[in-house]
Amino acid sequence: MKKLLYALLLAASASIFVVQAKAQVIVIANNSVKASDVSKNDLKDVFTGGSTSLGGGSVVPILLKAGTAHEEFLQAYIGKNDAAYRAGWRSLVFSGQATMPKSLDGDAAVVDFVAHNPGAIGYISKASPHEGVKVLTVH
Amino acid sequence: MKRFLILGAAIVLMSIPVSAQSLEDLNIQIHGYATQGFFYTTNNNIFTTDSSNGSPAWTEAVVNVGAQPIPKLRVGIQARYELFGNYSNAITLDWAAADYKANDKFGVRFGKVKVPSGLLNETQDIDPSYMWSLLPQSIYPIASRNGQLSTYGGVVYGVFALSPKLGKLEYRGWSGEDILASNDGYWLAYTESGLVLPNGVSGITTGGALHWRTPLSGLMIGASTNHKDKQTAFITSGAYTGKYALSEFNVPDFFARYEKNKLMVAVEAQRIAGSYSIQFAGPVSPPGRYDVRSYYAMATYKLTEKFTAGAYDSQTYDRSAPLGPARYSKDWVVSGRIDFNQFLYAKAEQHFIEGTDEDYDADLNPGGLKPNTKLTILKLGVSF
Image 1 (cartoon, each protein chain N blue to C red):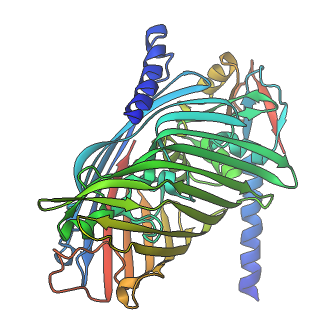
Image 2 (cartoon, rainbow over the protein chains, first blue to last red):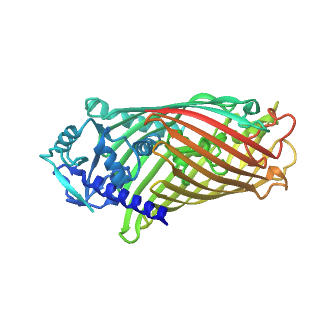
């Protein structure tokens, strides 16, 4: 019984960690993107190559190369680690179904690219400056 | 000739934007991967290798060049070097296509394109994209890929949102000329008995697929059908020339996949039934018939960040074949993959095979086939 309680406590702690992780990363988009919010499923579709539109307009996903925000985004919204996520994209690229999204070096590069390219959508750490882009609410 | 025209048109379309834009604007990307595999079997030699003594005759290297000159247009080409037993030791064109995606609901690609039938056909030759060393051979036979993988023609595709309560429906439709080349594994038994189809067999293939992404997150249910027109070809046996004919046939295929967190479960079932005839001079010989029913069920689980394990059961039966081990194959498999980083991975896999309806050849099994074989595979891969 005690073991079961420990397991439940551990699971509860893990779920709190996931909620906190979600809170540490924000989804940003070029001001041309019509949507102001996005469902988790639609966001996953865009970032896994299943869709190229959001709110009736075309969007282009932009990735971080690595880092905490990247890992947290994948964990919270895609449900895969980096290796599995990129393997998914590679299967689309090698079968001729998609082009690999741009991967940029850090939050500042993502904000700069998203701000200057219509339809661009990316993600950064919540604490990073993000002037010139809109923040999408994920529900 | 038609296939060269289609391919030519795709290549011309690829070259037009180059003159109009800088290389950076074209968003040119180069990707690739390479793998090295090793086989060991306890009994029968498999895949035209000397596998009972251990064989490393399985090497692949793939280079992919793609460009996206405008957001809705992508062009690309992919070449492959494959060494696989005695089947293959050559560089071939995987695909070369131009793809115009108007919106999520409609896109079209043409050239030499991958055939999007079944659950895994489009990606069955892309080793980095899956956990297994060998996909279920009942439906994705590695020795007979080139007639299934691609076609000189076009694909239309798109996805419709049904409603939040009904999920999304993806469609794909295709038509083109496909080629079962003379060195395809399908002809192995013919070749070893002295029958050669110097030009292989080619014909028109047409098909469609629906993938229903259900409201239950992670669950996709789908079906596809692939129609092959009647095909004829020259066949030779020594100095004699005759005619080989393959009747028209459909390949219905049903599949489902469920992915949730670290778990993936998939099932697929397929039937191929038809007849063929070989006619040299003399009286008409009765046609041969086949009615092959295949299925698999698989599951994988990500045990750690880097290690994934899984198992599948793959079975195939030719209901028109005589009773005995050659009529069926049952393949129980346990497998694991470790991703050292996003570029480098290794795989290990154990097969427990019953029946001999597999890719065994007579030349490398001169003592005859044993009904059961264990197959061990090790594989190392790198991709970028």
